[in-house]
Length: 250
Image 1: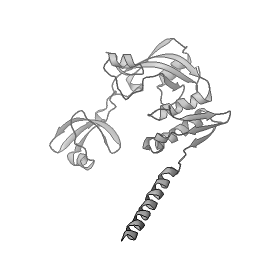
Image 2 (image 1 turned 120 degrees about the horizontal axis):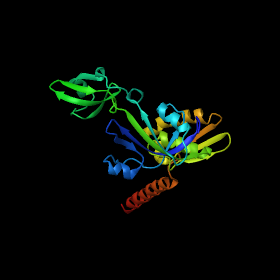
Image 3 (image 1 turned 120 degrees about the vertical axis):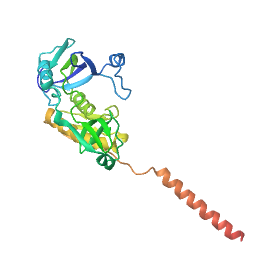
Image 4 (image 1 turned 60 degrees about the vertical axis):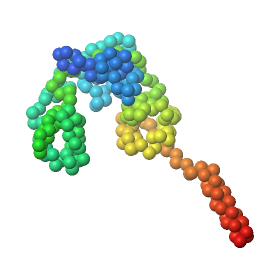
């Protein structure tokens, strides 16, 4: 395995000395550990070796990994989500929350001034918010098994869309040749705000990992169906004829 390879894995991520499970792509394991999320699609995960979003310890281990062999990697807290920093705990006035139309309660996740944090306590006129990452101060134990490697451009582009757009790639149509790829966007994604952001991430990843490719993103917007217009015209004509009949009776 080497930088740039697309690999499919099953994984589990655990934290701290107790090795508490916090993330996995295996549905049964998630249910058994009480972290099952019905909104999550539990399936094989694709990683791109050498990409920036992966811990360096995992990237290095992937290069020597083998298909079917289980690997466990330990990432010290300093290289993972960092140590807990008291300076990342801030006091806000209740007015700031009212301005953002938030009614704070302890344990609530909030976004203030483009920073994501967790409410620690609420008292008259002030709110204490922890902006440390939720997993800060914990060593990470990452276990994975490589299930295979993606070889075709179609599969690689499909994986890039899937990792960039949370609603998945199932209804997208992808056609890739040696030097170009056309991505046809499904109807439900065209007016989705998330898709507008995902589109740029997808182009960026394709340029990095398939640098010789020209990419065409096809979003077709058709006129209203002819049947609707025909129905409107028929209704108007019927109304005019009815009016004429009423006048003749008079």
